[in-house]
Length: 178
Image (cartoon, rainbow, N blue to C red; front, side, top):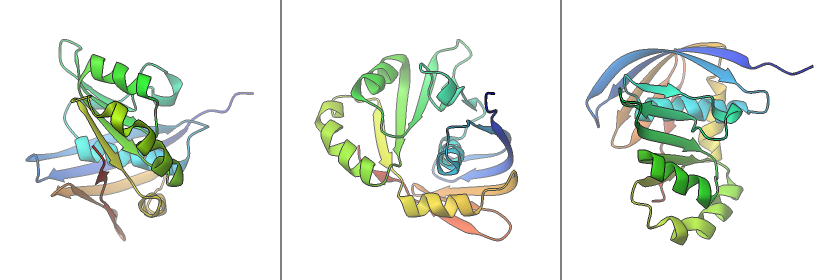
């Protein structure tokens, strides 16, 4: 019997002072059976960091040719491609050829520290690509505020995200690698 996704709901109020974007989003996150809570909460944080009226979750782990999040124009052109983890060079090149801008959030802890030096020089020429690393301690704090139904506020200033629920505040400070 196949396992089904676990559904989470999040009401997310975004105040992005860096971009002047202020909006509320009613989000449904489907946690794939093979996905960790850390990864799912990083998807939520990535949404907050890149929020727009047209940003949406894709089929993610269920589709090899889609990112975790994307923003498409009305003509269906991909304006923003958001990836998580430590993908290979081929996948990132393909993303850069399909999208106007590609953002990668690496989160694998020690695996990320080994992965990046191996690809750094190969990815240097991809002008559309931005790469960030999120520390394992930050992911643990995000997991602590995870609930099946969440009321969250996201405040972004100077590249820092403060994600807060009724009782906790989590600082998500992605380290820019590229």
